[in-house]
Length: 105
Image (tube, rainbow, N blue to C red; front, top):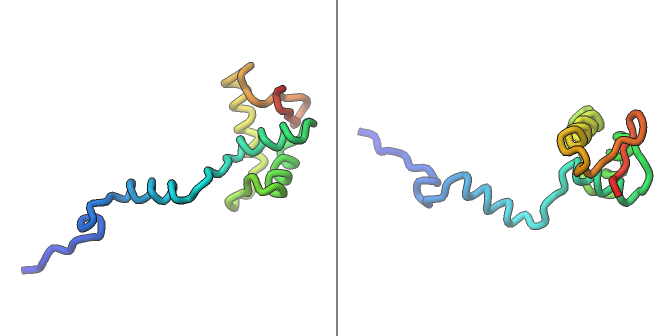
């Protein structure tokens, strides 16, 4: 007869979810998402920018860096367009010309 193996979660009573929440709480300040960082960069710049310029500025100011994706500018572009179309007048961005966005005043 073999003995049943117990895992660490069974012994301590903690689940993976509670450990993950605790790790996030210990991490300190919450990191900005790409779209939040873009809003911050645009409001600081005061001029319309395209998504590649925003990605470069976010990386230079260390607000956000790509986790290794090949086209972060395309992902940011679609996220901004999604916010503009779904939120309308309440969106943080406005499209000034083809491929360029500005922060709403």
